[in-house]
Each structure stands twice: as C-alpha cells, then as structure tokens.
Length: 85
Image (cartoon, rainbow, N blue to C red; front, side, top):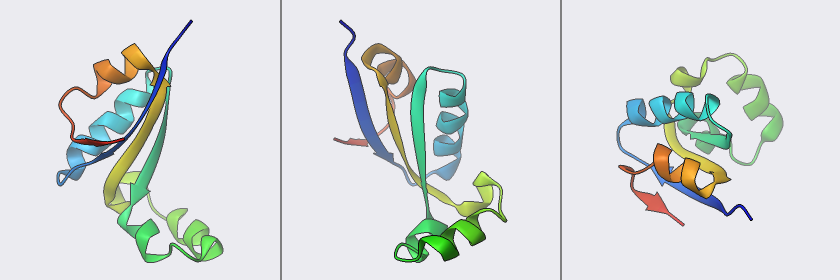
C-alpha cells in the first residue's frame, strides 16, 4: 500500500520555490502554487483569474507551494525546505 504525503512549503527565496515547482512537473506529484498576486485578490476569484492569466508563473511572486504525492517522492523533492503540516 502506498503512503501519501501533503506538505505546504513557504520560503523567503522565491527562486527555490520556482525550482521546486519545475521539479514537481517531472515527478508524479501534485503542486499548487500560492502567489502574492493571489493574496491581493483572495476574495475575488473572477478578478484573480483574469489577472493571473496575464502573467507567467514567475511574475506572480511565488510565496508558497503545496505538494502532494507518494511519500517517498515528496521526501526526495523537499528535504531542504521549511514546512507546515
């Protein structure tokens, strides 16, 4: 039986989060990106959707990433990150 792990990661360094996001695309894990742009429009999904679609991911100032997948895969991708469970 496979074990699954979910993690919510926050870092001061957005470049590390962007690198992790890129690595998750090559793995069998799910990644959800949280951005400063999203924080500004947290109660208005239509405005958020319109605004976020005009930017590439790096331009949205990544402030956090949620990662979910097989336990061993998530552990391999995230050993150096601070985490919130």
